[in-house]
Length: 329
Image (cartoon, rainbow, N blue to C red; front, side, top):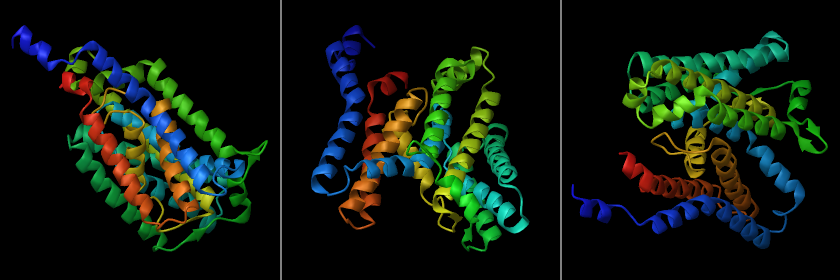
């Protein structure tokens, strides 16, 4: 390729900078615009209580998306997180309701199940060499089937004293919001300030190159799936406490919402790029603002899926067109 053809293929520096600035501020400005729109067109959206409820409702998705973001930064994908949340929470709920297990022990079991399910995904992807999309698609179906078998597709209600944990608050702020923020902050620090996180980014930028640099690619990838499984189970536990029960509909579509949150927030679907703190918080806020605002507009319940799907499509299309992706490929 000649120097002239390279110059024609590469956009000017000013254009690249302009694109970067648009990409940096587009999502925050969009969220502000949505808040203004729903605040003007509805009566109660802008009330403080509704804003707190909005952030509270997005807490489980925020936690699940933070774990998924680690996997996606490494260039992999896990679409079984919704079924993981369902199955792990189902086992914990059954232990408490049917066998009288103490809630703390049941919560530990939920985390252990989440880690085990994540390890299963990691084993299939890393050791067996199955494509992550195919592997986790099969896991999504299998995990949900196991949970439905355990519950006989019936609702299992939590005891009143356990439900109270889901309503705990500090100075009027639900504890789940504080927990979600703490988890996202910790995952962000793991990504940016530890060798594990930096190595995942390196893997996402090129598995072969990471291997030539001496990174333990297989082990790092495996543990990213385990962490993703643990955080999926935490999100499932938080969702169960919010609802007060485990239902057959729990987690349906959650995996696609989590992928949408991460990609809309700026983490590349192809790996190697993105900030977890920014992506997860802004992405989850965008999706929950749409859902909450449409509810206040008394829109058709299916409108959220339509709008959410359109947002995901636009974000993924924009991600595929980013110059950095083109250069890396």
